[in-house]
Image (cartoon, rainbow over all chains, first blue to last red):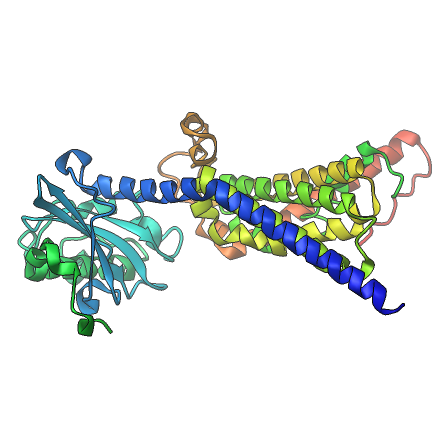
Amino acid sequence: MIKHPVTLAGVVLFLFAVAGVGLVALVHQQTEARIIANERQALLNQLNALVPAHSIDNDIVGDVTTVRAPDRLGGKETQVHLGRKAGEPVAAVFTTIVPDGYSGPIKLLVAVRTNGSLGGVRVISHKETPGLGDKVEERKSDWIHSFDNKSLDNPLSAKWKVKKDGGVFDQFTGATVTPRSIVLAVKNTLIYFRDQGESLFQPRFNNREPEDGN
Amino acid sequence: MATSSYGRLIKDGLWSNNQALVALLGLCPLLAVTNTAVNGLGLGIATLVVITLSNATVSLIRNWVRPEVRLPVFVLVIASFVTAVELSMNAWFYELYKILGIFIPLIVTNCAIIGRAEAFASKNSLGRSLVDGLAMGVGFTLALTFLGAMREIIGLGTLFSQADLMFGEIASGLTISLGEDFKGMLLAILPPGAFIGLGFMIALKNIIDKRLTRSRKAETVTSAEPEPAAG
């Protein structure tokens, strides 16, 4: 007699668990395709802002290669989106990570054209102080556009710094750390592209030997 | 309380028992996302949907859920709805979803929702629970939006910026700016601004309440002695 209510309670709980999982599964099924499409579209919009859609004819979202260059590109592994037209390389978009933001890593998209100039830089995510460091966002200020069309020759390497350190890039009042680390990360990406850019577009770059992997 | 009218339920939800300003429940999302009016509104509406659905469901099942497993069942119901809402927002309001981010799953931990399920929906009919859920949700949404608007105006000098993320391109005209030169008071959009803002809102509500009681007293012309303020 004592056991009965407990069993009943267990069954009720179980039924609700099944119903809950059922509901979630149903909604998931209904929304899955749309969510994937959304994420893809959002990424495509970001990439197209840096590498105009008319300048390429390949699927830049799907044409990805993964490289390991933590010293230059920040992350353990870095995804590089490749833009091509008629099979010829146009630009590479690095998902560079700035390891030393003021409060945690900053994720960037850095587009480098084959001639070594920047198609542009965007901040994807960051935890910088609102009102100070967050001016690196495109919608908060146009600072991030100061990278447009820059390259390792323009300005010269010694000037790839914020103005406070004797370079050409503005810092913000009250926030020097954020711009300083982003400038350095963009410069490093450009250096990586100068050294390794050619090989990125090689078709077999992705198919490494297993012993290469960690 | 159990026999109070629908009008009373609505008044409770919007004002007298506002979950954010009186019950002080659900403060985690309240304080965290209200740096702009649109963020507050977005999370408010998500919470509104969840609290209404959960109140309705809990009310429907109130007679055959055994008391021993009552709370786990409520949590299951709420968690399922929250996940469903999260997926739906991800699918149809992707930009807003990216901003509200982790706070959508955290609606599960909003005590206001399980509070209403336990204190009201599990003891009342479907209709009354629906109205209660809606009223509480709207009250919470209004508080969130108001706090968000206040912080946005003071901190950023704008109002309803990014409204287009929620209502489409047409709404981008809704954005009001106090002028390019207005730099804003940083404190307002940082976490302390949320606490200070909420404090002012509660104070304001209490002042209004006190005025109302006083004028009501004056109207009925009873004793001239004002009621001592309750804590």
